[in-house]
Length: 106
Image 1 (cartoon, rainbow, N blue to C red):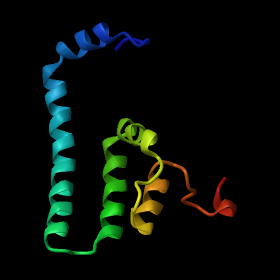
Image 2: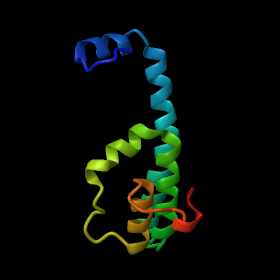
Image 3: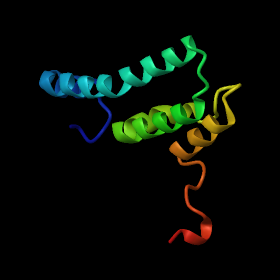
Image 4: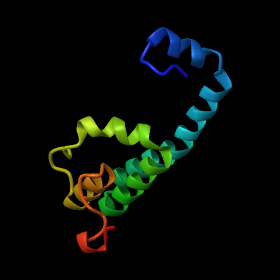
């Protein structure tokens, strides 16, 4: 992988590794598809599971790695109308809120 940002070089790198790209896409799909289906089912059945879905989303982004957390950073401000429980998990996931009390941190 190049050490500087060069689109053609990065494309060439990944074009030589289609299996790696496909495997990563499968991992993302395996994580995201059940979550998306669950959210849609919650909406269709009018279930109020925002808090547990927020935790699930935070854990999913953490499992998928830093790239996905970085993708969310430009959208760091929670969307308007977001449930307060979801807003809290949003902030924790993106590192804008402490997850430990200050006296417990090293």
